[in-house]
Image (cartoon, rainbow, N blue to C red; front, side, top):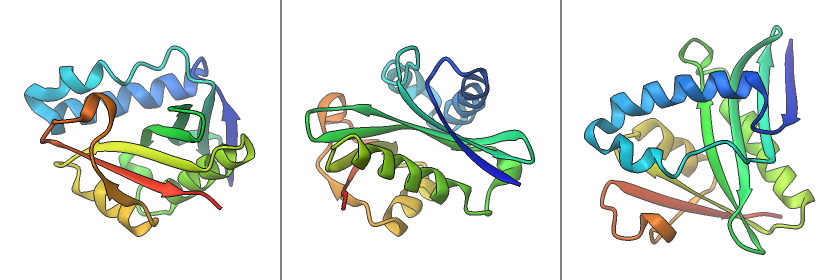
Length: 150
């Protein structure tokens, strides 16, 4: 059974998933992890999605306002054992739907160039590469994407 829940960053299941994400990213990012980690605090995110499979939290994602028209997607993660089941697509679809419901017309995000699977996932979900924005400007190991919502 699959259940998708809208919540916020105080949710203990979200906190646990993000801890697993941070371990994964520390391995992928190596020495650069501390730089990226400073932009990924979760203490005040109001829009979080958690996907449960058989009552176990296995995937998550979040959105937070970037500007008046744009939500930034943050903290996308699926547990290793739950991958290849379409859960990330379900999460991103729900995040986009929620952003649109809140009257935002675009989503943006950043990922690392070493996260090949993530880059392919965003391409497959109609995200377009854009110049690095905000704190990621000039960061060679970052790649940024956007998608206009309908």
